[in-house]
Length: 228
Image (spheres, rainbow, N blue to C red):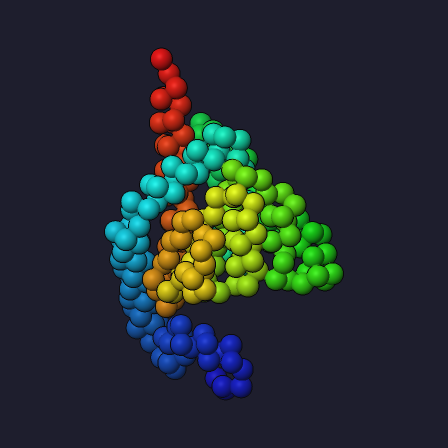
């Protein structure tokens, strides 16, 4: 295979066994199997690291989110690219949960493509989330922003706008937290410490599912406290 395209080089770095010139199918399958096992071990270990580091802060964040929902707050989730998809998944967890779980008001800020493209075209992509939070956000709402790098300018501006409006802010980042780790406007920040975008996003998915379950549990506890 020629090396004329950077995509090919990138794929070779991820899957060297596909570009080794190996003609032995069994050998290639063994390499694929080992690669899969290695990735599974890596994400299991990473999830364990995140749990060990953030267990208490996850509970504290869930308590704050439960109090916000109980007070009539809504969740506004946002991110770019794959993190946008995760933000939409997070919103759907709260809004349309499986089983008998109580639905809670939650919205993905990339769902309305007309709004996203209008703001991006007329003003700039850096304000695409901040402007929506400025329009929709109310004191007692919850803003959850997801980023693998932690450096997305439109997330940084969104968190600042949310904090100004008395919104509970939750950040989920990767690597070392990036610029999100430097903000004073994020109430609860969770960082997945990995150099791999793939492992970061996998662990972030686990993290926000755990946060959803913990928030539902905290809401149940609050409801039980009201009973005579």
